[in-house]
Length: 282
Length: 312
View 1 (cartoon, rainbow over the protein chains, first blue to last red):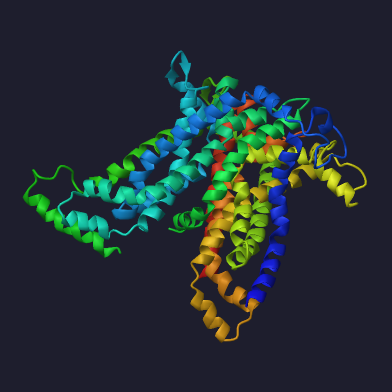
View 2: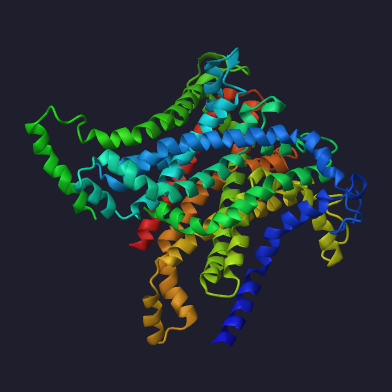
C-alpha cells in the first residue's frame, strides 16, 4: 500500500511539473533580476545566478517607484474599500442565508449582472461620474476616495456570494435557542451569529483585500498624481511608455509588492475551495 | 430547510394585525433593510455609469467630454464601419475562446490530479494557486521582461536547448506577441478554474466510485461516465465566469503591447480605453462599451441555452 502511494505521488508530481515550473518561473525571474546590477541586466545570454549580488537595486527602486508612499496608498485604499464592502455585504449575505424572501433570486441575478458590468466596460462612465462630483477644490477625479468607493461596489457580488455560502453552513440551532430564551432576532444575530461568522468574514475580507490590492484599471484611470498612486500602478509606470527600463529595479519592486501577498494567499488557500464553489453554484 | 423559517413568519402575520403598535418594523421590510445598503452602493456606482454610457453613446461628444447634441445611432454606425473595431472584435473572439478553452482543458486534469491523495498534495495545491495572488498587471510585466527580445530569459532558454537559432523579438509583432499574451491569460486563469473544479470533485460522494469499481469500471470508464457528467455543472460555471472575466480582461494586453504594434493586438477593452482616454473619442468609446455589453450578454445566454439543451 505504502509503495503504491509513493509511485502514485511521483506520477502526480510529474503530471503537475510543467505547470508548476511555469508558475514558479516569474518568481525565479524576479528574484534573479532584482539582485543584478544595472550593467549585468543588459547582458545576453542572461544568467540565473547574478555574477555578484547587488542589494543596491532595492534602494534605487524604493526611490524611483516612491515605494513607501505607494504601499501606504495601496494599504489605505484596500483596507478602507474592504471595510466598506463588508459593511454592506455582511447584512445582505445574512439575509440571503437566513431569511427566505421573495426578492432573493432577483437580488442574486442583480449581483451577477454587476459582475458582467466590469469596471473596464464602465470606465468612461465611472470617470465622468467622478468628474461630475465636486470635492475639495476639484472633483473626485484623482482622489483615493473615489477609488475606495468603486472598489467596494465592484466587490459586493463576490463578497455576498462567498459570505452567504459560509453563513448557510453555520447551524441555526444556537440562534433559535437564543430566541426561545427571549432574545430578539437582532440581538440573536449580533451576540450569537456574528461571533460564529467571524472566520468566514475574515477569509472574505482577505480575498477582497487582495483583489483590491491587485486592481489596475480603475487606479490607472482615476489616480493621476504619482503621490496618490497605488503600488501596482507605480510599478507599471516604471515600464509603460519609457524608452529605457531599469529592469532590475522593476523586478525588485514587483518582488517586494507581490511577495507578501503571495505568502498571505498561500496560507489562506485551503479556506478558499469550499467557500468559493458553494457561492458560485447556488 | 425551507419550511422551517417560514413557520415563524406565518405565525407573526396575524399577531401583528392584532397588536399593530408592537411591531417596530413590518417583517417584510427586514430583508430589504439588510440588502438595502449593498443595493444602494451598487446601483450608485455601477448603475449610474451604465446609464451615463448608454446616454453618451447616443450623443455627439467633444474630445473634452462636452456633449454637443443628440446623435442618434451615429456613434454606433461609425464604430461598425471602423476597421480597427471589426478587427478588435474578431481578435476578442479569438482571445476569449483561446484563453477560456485553454484554461478549461489544462485545469481539468490538474484538478483531477490534485483531487488524488498523494505525498505533498498540500504544497502542490498552494503552488498551482499561486498566480491568483499576483496582480494581472504585475504578471504581465514579469512576462514582458521574460520575453524581452534582447535580454530575455525565454530566448536564452530556447536557444540553449536549440529550439531557436537566434533571439526572437517576441513582442515586436502580433504573430508572436498575441499568442504570448494568450499564454499569460491562460496561466493566470488556471487557479480560479481549478478551484471551481476541486469544489465540484469534492461534492461527488466516494461511494459512487466504489460501486463502479465493484461493477468492474476501469479508471477511464469512471472518468468518462461518472466524473465528467457529475462535473458538468461546474464546467458550465467555470466557462461562463471565465468568459465574462477574459472578455473584459484589460491589464495583460494593455501592459504588454498596448494593442500595438500598429493596432495589431487590440482586443475590444484595450481599443475602448484607447478611444476614451488617448484618442479623445468619448462618444465612440461609449458606443463600443454598449456593443460589448450586448456581445457578452448574448454569448452568455447562447452558451447557457446550448448547455441546457445538451444536458436535457
